[in-house]
Length: 379
Image (cartoon, rainbow, N blue to C red):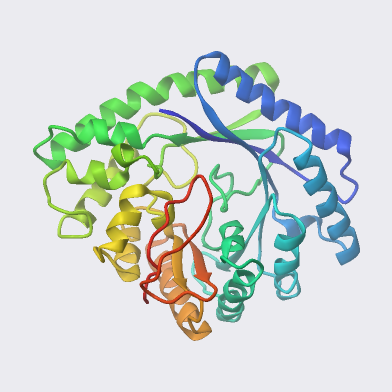
């Protein structure tokens, strides 16, 4: 187990300066250095601001600040910045420009409050997925955009991450699919698998928690916790699918998949660590070797993935879709996700990736180290 992301929280103002940014970057890197000194690998360091509507005072001021954020990020050790969600109608029109102008920035739109879906915003977001897909020939820009339903603040994983509360702060997102495989090898029942999962993750996460608490006290930086969610892997031996199939229920996508997904999430809820974020199971089709392979075999559909999200997970993540998918279909799919989130009172998100010029069944051709190419899914 290692650290996939150290995400630090930062509150921006219209007069935010380079010096203030560098202070946050230095603090974030000191957290990274601390964990690396303990022998842990840290994949990325990220910065998450409060929702951008809170520091949007004029279009000119906002884009000037966005330019600065992009330049400062490029010249620092911060890998990515999330400017958080919005649902303001005037702001939605600016999102394609934001993503085009700032290639290190992520942004999101909130589709619903606790009990209410914003249908107009949802329809607009369906259109945005199509518009953003055309910003590059592979539709890759949608990696940095998502629709959120009842999101929790201070989640370390992107694109959902946004800061709420005093800053600076930090949380950890883990790289841990290797432990899932280890926990499930040789098990014969779900009870046995759950106990081994609990024991193994407790053993490995508690040292991270201990070090994080030391840092929090020493540097006076608020600690949100750890998101222990099972992350994908492009290593075939560490794939989520490989771990699932060790349990003996047959192929991923068949009967038993839903039961295993539920067990993982419920087991994580019993871990005695400070938790933040989703604390469940992520099933991003293009970020996991086994999921990409099973998709090519037709082992699951988009609707199956949504079903699994009812008991775990983040929703629909890095889903490759036909470039000519109708906006009405995207709108209906977003309504399904939002309805599930409202009914179950749980956070879900959608990162949908229409691929320009591609049809269902054709292959993606991404050249990105964290992606595994797969077939375009039909809806």
